[in-house]
Amino acid sequence: MGQIPPASMRCASAFSPIPSSRAIAWRSFEMRIAIDMDEVMADTHAAKLALFAARGYTWSEEEIAGRHLSDLAGSEDAAQVESEMQRGLFFADLAVVQGAQEGIAALAQDHEIFVATAAMEYPASCPHKIAWLARHFPDISPMNIVLCGDKSVIAADLLIDDSPRHFTGFGGTGICFDAPHNRGDQVSHRLTNWADAEAMVSGFA
Image (cartoon, rainbow, N blue to C red; front, side, top):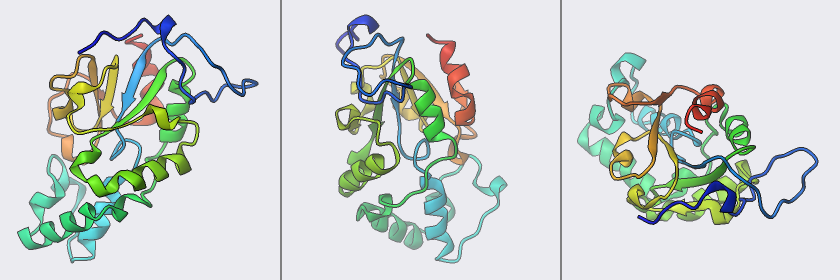
C-alpha cells in the first residue's frame, strides 16, 4: 500500500461546510477518514427489517443482537430478500442514520472525508448509492466516493465501518460503528452513535 501523504500536502475535498468559506482549493487536514455507507450513513438495517416484516418476520432487539437477519429467517425468504437487494433499487431511498449528517460535517471541519462502500457486493446499487449521497450529503465530492470490494486498498488514517472484517489488511485504525449484527464482536474501538464521533476521532489525531 502506498504511503498516505502528509496532511499538509493533501488536496482538500469538497466537503467543507465551513462558515464564510465557499470554496477552498487547498487545506491542511489532521487525518484522512474513510466512512462506510450501509448501517453507518444509510439505515440499511431498518430497510432490511421492513423487507423481512413483509414476509411475516418480527424479532426483538435481543433476538437480533449479534446476528445477521438472513440467518434468522427461512432460507427461501432470506434468498428473496437478497435477490431484492441485488436489484439495487433497495439502496435508493434509505433513511439517513441518526446524526450522521451532523457528525460527518463536524469531522469535515478538520479532517479529509472519503466514503468507502463495498458496493461490489451489490453492483446494481452503485448508481443508487451515488445518487443517495448527492441527495443527503451534497458537500461530499464525487471524487471522494470509493465504490470497492476489499477495503484493504483504502489508504486512510481511520476507517469507520460496521463490519469489523473490513479492518483486516487495512493500514490504518478501524473504528466499529455499532450495529445490531456486530454487538457480539470484540473490537478495539467502538463508536455507538454519531454524537460521539468528534470526541472519539480527536483521540487519534
